Length: 163
Image (cartoon, rainbow, N blue to C red; front, side, top):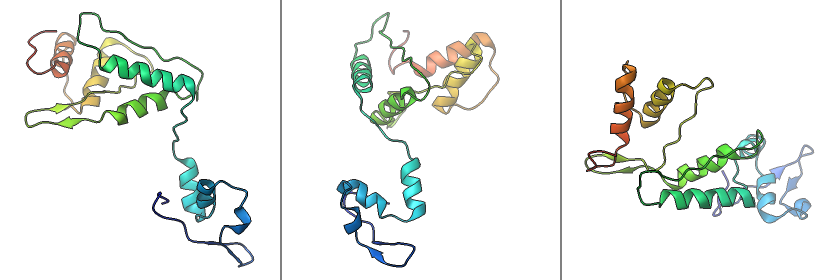
């Protein structure tokens, strides 16, 4: 794996001659180091997710940061990300989640950003079940009436008796 501290070894072309990067001089230095990787490492690198900070994505992240810092109130702001398939919506959410990882406390786990994949045929019960699964809660068959209360109790901030 290439990191800023390491450089890949020189590669060997099919004729057996060594390529120390001289034939790749037209490439940017960061691309050159990837081009010199072995086939499997290069493919793994190319297939990995990449963050592309295009203006709309950066704006969405900024809005999410603002919303996360919003003081609690009766009607919190929200954001709906819509766009064509493969346009980066999931990557924006994943980057935001990774920026705000869970924090372990002595008495609880704090999850500042909880990501839930909405079921293809959503209903309230399936949504609450997905929230419980994202929390890592044990699976159990709850009645519909108690499912909402379990989820709300799990998400309630410590010391807050009611929302």
